[in-house]
Image (cartoon, rainbow, N blue to C red; front, side, top):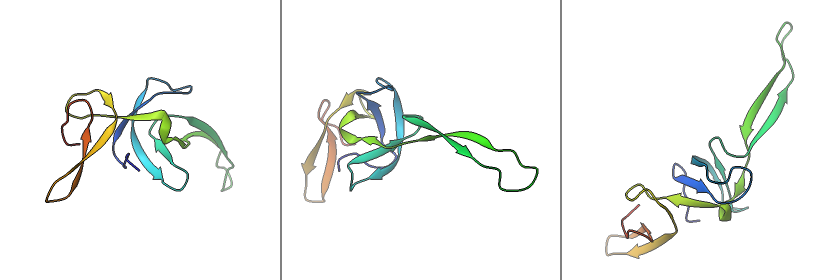
Length: 101
């Protein structure tokens, strides 16, 4: 998968269209990513101990990797990812500015 953990992505479709966030987790078997602050779902937690209150927390849920584009750290634009082969290895590059990501 071209998007890795700790990349900054821009959301292209869905209720959070246009927002940016950091990738927290990559689920490669399903081609999904979990992005910080995007696609939040509410989870109800029961109290565990006596006297403790229950609570509702918001957790990020996975979204399809096809609905996100990586934000280039050099040019700041949302772009596709390409690869450049050199003698030292294979690097991801921004398709717009041709700089290494």
